[in-house]
Length: 171
Image 1 (cartoon, rainbow, N blue to C red):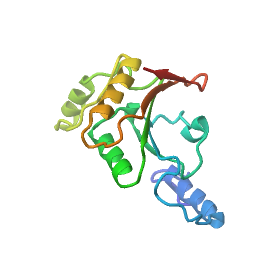
Image 2 (spheres, rainbow, N blue to C red):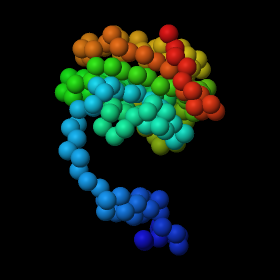
Image 3 (cartoon, one colour):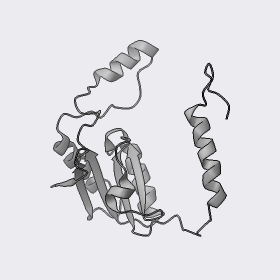
């Protein structure tokens, strides 16, 4: 493995490439379809503490997993859900936010600070929130009211507790 620039140690990306080579040695194409077996799409935060496959009892091929900062339903999330439903057959949407999220308490000042630093305002909203349960409800409402999604009746939202591993449903 090549060392990271300016270092004697391999970069994390180099470690990923090495791990992939090991993975590929025993990889066998199981002939899976791109359509999720369980016909479900999960929208969740990108937080590294969330092992969604283990927490939800998922196997490879079971569900589409759509992740972003906060697990917030943004226009891009609706884009992914629309493709998931209309082109790949999903019917259920599960939203998962979590305790201790980095977006809790962050403000739109973050965008202003970026604009000041780089001289250009980001085109995207931070989508920060102070009310975790309220943001889950807002995300559920965005899914339920999107005209692009044909399947809006099976939408449920949860908060994952990063200390206990338990889901708490938001209604």
